[in-house]
Length: 380
Ligand SMILES: Cc1ncc(COP(=O)(O)O)c(C=O)c1O
Image (cartoon, rainbow, N blue to C red):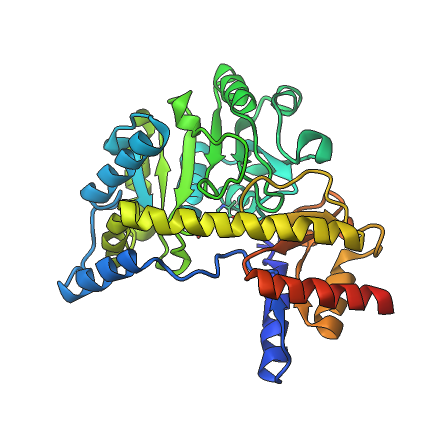
């Protein structure tokens, strides 16, 4: 437990809520979830399911019709055939990551991860008694693992590497070519590439082919949380190689029995054309926010060497403005009423020189946030 850290941003969020309770106005640029409500057709499907009494356990790998709908989504969106039997519906992609780690890691096994990266990953590895091997990545690598990192870092005990594209916190992508090369390297060494595609659908340029289009050996993680805007419904999925499905089913049964039933019925409406039209319009809104925010932050002195191509995050260097991003974030909240996430949440690769901005607020609020940061910087 001593090696499991909390999300530091939660303390910041709690403080922000406290200040709000005292009447202060806070611009939230720390929150890693869409501000849009769940689309109407999904809500309606969820309500209907509850009214019909769909409140009992489903099979551990999920409702068969939802597994089929997810497989259908791979066909229509990516042109990839995935048998529904390989799709395991999970309690958020968090459970998908947990299942993947549980299935792949024995005590002492190593997993390669990008630093900065999504903080929970190293803890998933650790709770399975694995050893997370953080690989420092920089703007030169577009803040992502590259084939050369795997070639250099893959040791005798390495069993997997985890890649998220687009990434949290950097919003950057891994090209299909590199992803495919990394899947090959992992397979040649008897290991596995885990590819977290949770921010697919929120990609503003560049290509986002699913890793399933070039490998049957990868574990692909996805979620209804971000693009589908269903964070609180707690629903995600894992596409695993056929040979691993039985083991994963067994793990899901034991770890949490089944993903939430009403949420699964609601999610059946997530792939309807009516819902996808709403979601794609909202993705355009996220792009407009990014296009507004990145140049404004650069003008203020934040360094953003790589344009984030997806998700809803900007990972910004703040070395010209402060020597300590944690104190900076705290002072910005207390003095200017703007909440952002300090780098410490994403690893140990120069966290004191980085902060993350989430553009999960309207352009109007982002403009207010930028004005407040400008005034704060002028004073300090
Ligand atoms: C990269 C990444 N993976 C996985 C998750 C887990 O999300 P959920 O469990 O809601 O699907 C998150 C949440 O922020 C994330 O940023």
